[in-house]
Amino acid sequence: MKRRHEEDFMALAAARSAPLFRSACVLTSGDVHLAEDLVQDTLGRMYANWRKIADIDDPAAYTHTVLVRTYLSYRRRRSSSEQPTDTLPDSGAVTEHDATLRVTLLNALGRLSARDRAVLLLRYWEDRSVEQTAAILQVRPGAVRNQSMRALARIRDLLGHDLSELVSS
Image 1 (spheres, rainbow, N blue to C red):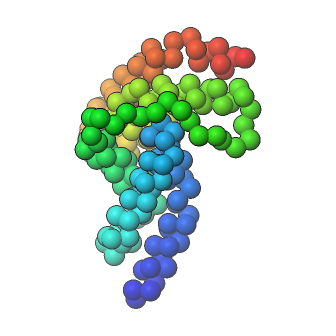
Image 2: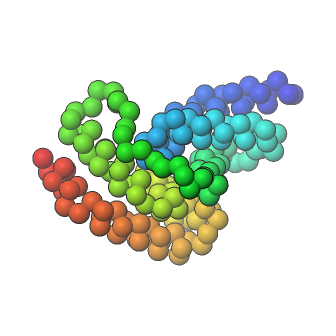
């Protein structure tokens, strides 16, 4: 029985590691090292409680819930002396236009609060419904709608006309 649970967890971890990493990169504004730590911590928490988690309807979706909660927990306990960096690692084969757009968006996301970033990630990057986002963040759907609207307004203010110039060029 224990071996079957371990095999099930290993299959889930192998299937969900890449999507978790991509989501973690968005949450951390491109900090790949922190993203790797968050994914590792998320999978560690999942493994520690796998016997309880294995029976839920959608363990794959639950991994994203654990990731977001782990990220928010990290942001709450982070020392005030730590500052995010504005340099991004080299990426794969993307055009200069795509890279510029991505850097601009990640920099703007990095200037938002952790909660705003989490709402935008869940709603627009992972394309989750208001209700799913509310359940993950443990708030009411109205709060998610308000926070989404405010976070989008903040990011538009931060980007100004820069984004329209990058998209149209």
